[in-house]
Image (cartoon, rainbow, N blue to C red; front, side):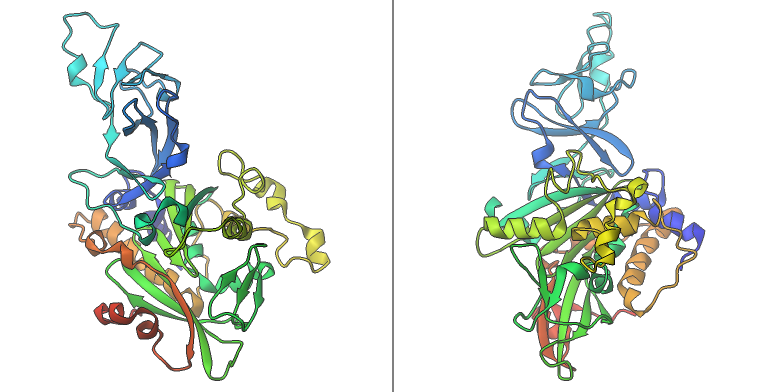
Length: 430
């Protein structure tokens, strides 16, 4: 349970809000690289942490990320002419170059010195790992977070996106909540002793080596955030073996989930979130069957699960297209198809910003409590005028990795699954 004050403090992401200031210390995904039009085809609209932006690629192939509003009178640069070396606002002809500098003001007198003095708001951006990364903070940006898939050839990973009509914390809490998968995603999951971790098949189903619906949650701190183990009885030998699924949480809103999913709950504003999902294979290219299986399991098929704007036909006004007849017939537990649609439905059903004053957390919510504590500590420091000290900005995000295995009951899962990295943990989290 949180107080109303703390809930607002944790969830509001605009640049004049404490959490918004804290988030702006980090690089954030702004859009898929595939969303950015080719040179000459104009910009794409980007919404990030409450700011209205456009991303645009010039004739030289360089990408700019700048305010959508023209610095003259605020007309949208989505309407601008793309002249290759700049965007020209159709309202009064002001031309804005890469980096935001206004280079032409054709309506101003020739003797005016205004042109060289006006610059549109512009932010540093970098292309990497299928995403455009943006830094909305002040001063010199930190190093870009270097996730494991970012060193791989493009054929080894897939990046997908969908939009949730909820605050980013709501989305993030779902990503680090292992217990809900035994219920909400049960129709896609069957128990099998043939595997030593979760296995997604080409038909979109999943096998799991456990039927235990009450995992023990054990949180271990790291420099980037924490890793928690969800410890279940293994179906092969429930008295002597455990199935451990270890999920990594990396500040400010990333989670790495077994078998190989990275999820980023990126705030568009305080009530909408872009969920970026990455899955990868470090050893070989992903096959067409693997891609199809994961897209089906997750419910991320464009034109079938997703609309062109990355949203879904299912929403609160049509009860997320829940199949009540299928529930009656025992064909589906939730009446919702695709794990992402299931997540969206339950999270959106809580409202854009969940009222956490009425919740009652249990033992399986330990990771959520720990994540909230980390975020709130940053927001409180900003609110109270203290200097932000964020160790994660210097962390190696190549260590943000999930893991899963069947181990003997009583063995230390942290040392077993993470080896040398376990030695760097200074204390067990409460």
